[in-house]
Image (cartoon, rainbow, N blue to C red; front, side, top):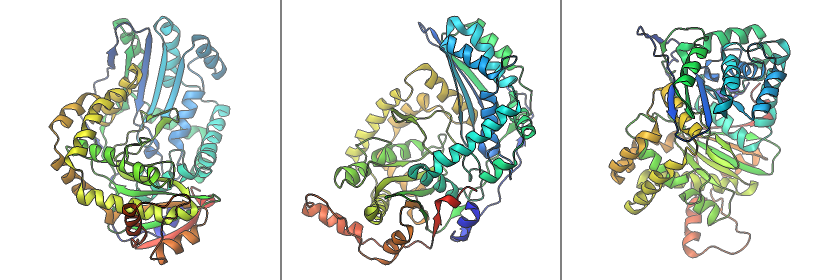
Length: 502
């Protein structure tokens, strides 16, 4: 339902046909784990990542990758039924978690070294010999439906993110949410899950490793246990082509809320292996680092004007670990990235001004770039902050496994040198080369979609209204420029939230 509605409001585009086939690589695969020992550690971290995310869902069965991951993680392990798995994990004080995204499905385990004789078989047999009974399957489908409703449709911010994902990936395997579509979930059977597991969870498509208190014996035991996966066929993935937008569009999602939130941006051709990745990382860090107060967007929109809780910019789709740990969730890196500006919800009447302000600030970033002093401060900050991205051996292992699975550099190891060699001129040139404001696709979630559309499209001046003290003269002039900015999308539409993702 969402896709047909979005297509009806899309601008002229230059589509390229999706590439469905993958080139078969003749050389034998290297089936061995990444090993990262840590002297003095008593904990072992395990990671197994498969190229079996939601982008691999068959048409008409959107949600199959997610459901399969839940059946695998919740259906038992070898001879152990689900309750026995949970009882043993509790007794060991150990953890197993699964992360599902568009390209990858990642299973992570953590236990004491002394408990590995009991823990390792649970972890590996969960992957190689999961229980696949009907009760586990039905729970997994219900879990997917619940996440679609409670996790996305009932959350302003998650809904905006998911619809933006669909808009910029129209016609692409990334288009639907990781959890699937209602119609797709209705069509999935237990036999589909069994087939998907056999085809996607194999030696050819897995990247795995262990870190912490590891030794040769444990490495060999892990390797031998993972050999129970089917061999599979080694293939070189060929990314599907994405739509090249030539005009702006506006998609307003109406939901019963007293606020207005915004996402805008476009697909990006710069992944972690691209020479301009460090330059764009510095630029977006200066402009709007996730949950940081030093970014331009945050300072001016929240700090100076109190518009909302925060405003950020990204060159990769960003999923954080949680509110208490806002770092990037490992396992969610995508082969094909995107540029996004996220304006967190404002009061409904402030929405049009907030969108205009963020749009103008982004256009100014591309046009004017960074000054030398700002560049040097942010570059130095990034070189130090990077060391905190992986706070434990498990996250360091996660970065390494994720990078190898997608064939990109491990930025924990490779970013320092690139940042040291980087210049402000390279940053500003990269912004002009890769960020295109005229192509921005805009998604707004608002409690009054019709009023937002009328205001943003037909009212020339949408001023900032201060509830307490008045701004100084400089800020007042800036506000006038933002409020009188002419936002003119080529097409626009208003959709009801409850009709999405069917």
